[in-house]
Image (cartoon, rainbow, N blue to C red; front, side, top):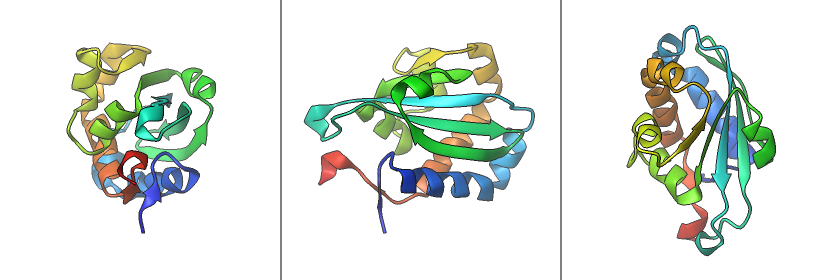
Length: 140
């Protein structure tokens, strides 16, 4: 059953998928910062309000992933902001998240060299999203 994109149910399924990934366990070793994903509203895509995803990632595990306000997500150690459409491109592997940050397609608050050191972990996080069946609001 597909889960609504960026919903509480999706966040829980995403956390479980990350924690099943041996590749992420290895690639995320040493990571100890919170990450906030800010999904900007796109009313014309049936995504009317900005939403945040709080990710408590620590040493190769996802301790918590939950839906929060955009402001709460921006308060994390690292905050990555993009439009709903851009995040959909990342989640469907049409855009590599690290490349997107380097190209300015995703806005990063935090230390870019640290993010770049964990490119493999970021790629594994993206792969985990592709394993969660998603119902995209602009495809209804």
